[in-house]
Image (tube, rainbow, N blue to C red):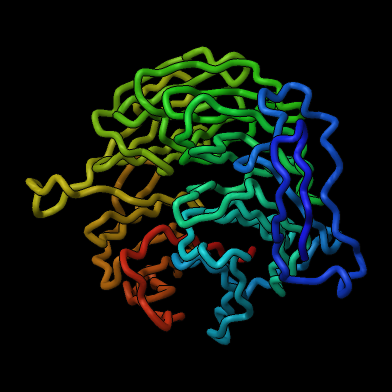
Length: 414
């Protein structure tokens, strides 16, 4: 299906092809360009260019889908999304970006009410039925496509009420708010720097956005920029909140607690080791943090360390050691390092309860099903780890292995 787009002020006339996953004749709903946003008055970037113009098409109304709790969603490193049945160990369906240049993932997905919201590297964004892969709507940020045009990296759609938020990078470098029900563009704002490798945070009707050496906060509904605070180093961690404070770390080892309304620094501390990234969670009135070599429990009110556990290993001189992923589930911390060691940690006292030497090297997040089973992805496929017997079972094996596989994302349907 083709759409002819006339951009304002005579800047550009172009023809773009939006995904042809389902025709409007099949769905009985005509395609739409989406109405011009009436709530974007605070944007500093209202004139669409070939990099940041948004087109949109709706195929079917969003509806709540009963959960297929036998399924796990796999955002594979080749850029495809798969639904895999854990009982039959068969693929339910496959989905990929319309543009064939998208050959690796670099992003994550969000599942809400049975609807999968998934961004792709080149700026494509979809809402899908998690049972069938059917497209509810699709949007495309920017008209340029090439293997070098990496529009979105490490993004997970953040949803609150009817809004969906994410950021783009490089030539685009905007924060966008979309209507999660239709995919229509609501507001956007051009950020100072092009390096946006972390998801945003919603809290207290604000959207908190790390942007290289800045942290912004926006009004979540109108997109009005309230504050931007500068820092000495890039703020490259996933921000989390306890509802009163926003916690975010820089590229070094500094951890900050910020006021969500005015971004005042409430406290800050040096953890000695950096690379926090996504390894941070607020659970049971404690801030749990993983650095490259340690686990911390921190009092969110004042930054006092409740406990610290250093992860030791046989080759202490090997500085390549690094904790890569951390997940908190049912009052346990689960993590692994780049030496393929899997850890189970008690968050009450920091005691390492178990270490498992893995046979397969993880390249994804960790999904915990229950006290017995954990899942991760390796370059060969999906692994189910028995936490009692330490046995690893390859449930899904890929037909081929790509060069330098990395950055998978998996999600149990529940």
